[in-house]
Amino acid sequence: MKIKGKEFEIDQRKFYQIGIVAFFIMGVSNMATLLQTYRVLLFSQILSQIGGIVFNLALLGLFIHMFRSLPPKDINMASDEELESILKQAVEEKK
Image (cartoon, rainbow, N blue to C red; front, side):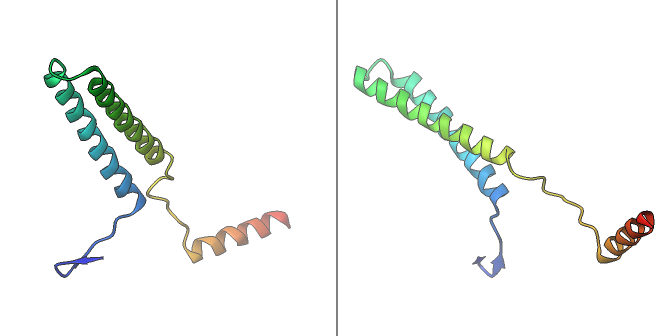
């Protein structure tokens, strides 16, 4: 994707990190709103606010779980020469 001539990519790791930050901010701000306005809200409105907070925190937990389940970012792959030497050593050991 290009924006203003610069190309950028959003991979899974960045997507999950953005989701974690976004749902954390939404959950905290919804809690602050509830604490500031709970005296003027009806009971059903309070339940609705609490449900929204629980939903935001559940999505936060989902994004954290999915982020932690990603494979490690830096996997050192062997080059072709290293693979050939490993195979030669394996063949020599079998003889």
